[in-house]
Image 1 (cartoon, one colour):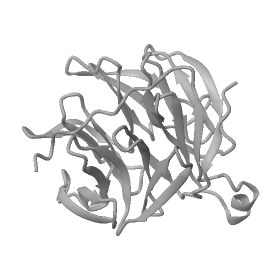
Image 2 (cartoon, one colour):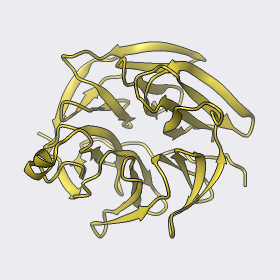
Image 3 (cartoon, one colour):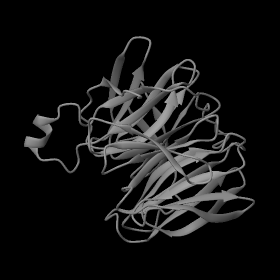
Length: 285
């Protein structure tokens, strides 16, 4: 049985947006509601907190070393030394009530970015492909854009729309439904894909990360000591550590006292490696 270990008792309101930085040998992740950028260094076991000026939700890596960050104000470049963000664009700048949520770099250097309604119920979000060639809307009428990652060969993008509980796969310029989550499985949040093609999906209301085959069969459950499990990503020197974020956003103060690990960052040693994150070519400067 795989045993999660809490490596940072961050007490995040909503941990999210993980990405392993192979060049810095660290994990970047965010606390959305806490407006904090986190850095975890497994060589020292130390976590660093960098306060942000407003809400942030996910991080991606640029090929030149910059960190691209999704924020309430749009996509930006963050200076991790001081928390200063330079906003570069927003695909929905004039659409009030929406914000960016999840982002992921693509094999071709483009950025895929999903938006969501701040109320988290209305289907006013969309999924965009952003790159040097411009901005393309790849899906519309989404609720909470979550859980984006690529198949090992880079030809398929997996994407979760959390409120209806639908896991999509995009390949050959077409979307299809891979899996529909129901009350027996729980509410899906973030996901990642390992080097063998298995999907690992955070189940937000069940305290689990589930393992799923590329054809949508659930084969494994990893139990976390926290009910709110939000996202996951592979990291570590051999990419065989599954890092998992959790949250406290719907917990009472009494419940938080009863579960001091809630909102922490967890590490699970896996028998298979993940994949290194792709680097962005956009923005060019």
